[in-house]
Length: 228
Image (cartoon, rainbow, N blue to C red; front, side, top):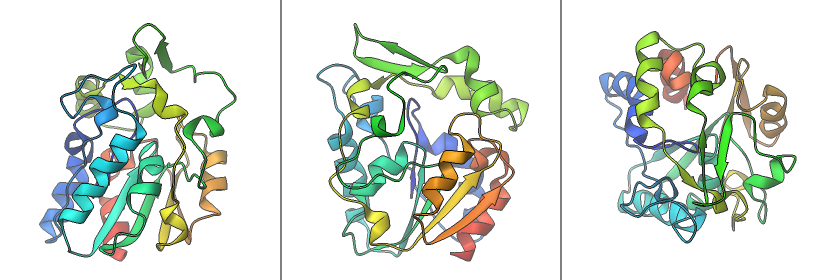
C-alpha cells in the first residue's frame, strides 16, 4: 500500500511505474487517498480535512483487508503512516522513502526551521500550501523521464496547511519492522535529514535517486519490496 507525500493527488499515478512491475510478479498494490490534499471531495484549506482525516482514511483501507501488507510511505506519507499503521495486524513491514519519522507528539513542523521551504507556496488566505510548479522538476523530478516530468504537474494539489502542525498519536515504526530508503540525490528532503531518520529504522538502503525513486528507478524499488 502506497501513501503519497504532500501537495499531490492521484497516488496511483505517482506509484504506477512500480505498481505495474509488482503486478507482473503477482504482487497487487493500492494507493491511498489523502483528504487533506482534497482527495475526499472536501476542499483543502482552513477548516478542511487535516492529518486526523488522512490517518483515518489510510487506516480504513488497511483495516478493510487482511492480507499481509507492506506500507510504502513517501515523504509526508511517513507522518500519516506513523499513526495509521500502528496496531494494524496485517501490516508486516514499513518501507519509508525519503520519509519523515515522527515520535509520538511530533508534527511535520518540528522538522523545519519555522520557515516554508523555498519550493513551497503558502497562501494564508485559503489556508493551503502547494509546490511552486516552476520548481517541481528541478526539486523533485530531475532524474525522471521527460514524459513523467511533463505529466507530474497535472497531479499537484493544494493541501491544508494545518497538517504541518498537527501531532501524531502513535509511531508505528517503533512497533513494526521497517526499512528506510535514503534518496541520495533528493533536492526536496535533504539526504542528511533522511540519514538521521534512517538511524531509527530497522534497516537502511541508499539509492542514487531523487525524491521519487518509484518513478525514476521503479525496478530498484520493486526489487527492494520483493526482498521484504
